[in-house]
Length: 100
Image 1: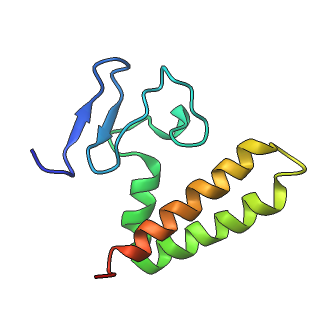
Image 2: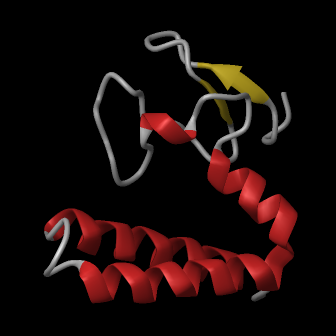
């Protein structure tokens, strides 16, 4: 099995990529794995990464870090701070891929 293979969760039957991992939708997690972004065989964030390429994806993550950092007080509070952190971590992982 390849790390990019799509597999199905035995609990929620959701499909996910091994490389990305999976947070079962039975465990509601609106930050790390919102159910509305997992309707197909490829999670939305992975499709975005594929379409934008490395630099585009880094810029996308940076934009979301700015957005969630700006709006947390006015919209979703701690949930937005967690989303900011999620995008920052995704950005760091993408940048570190080329670091030896």
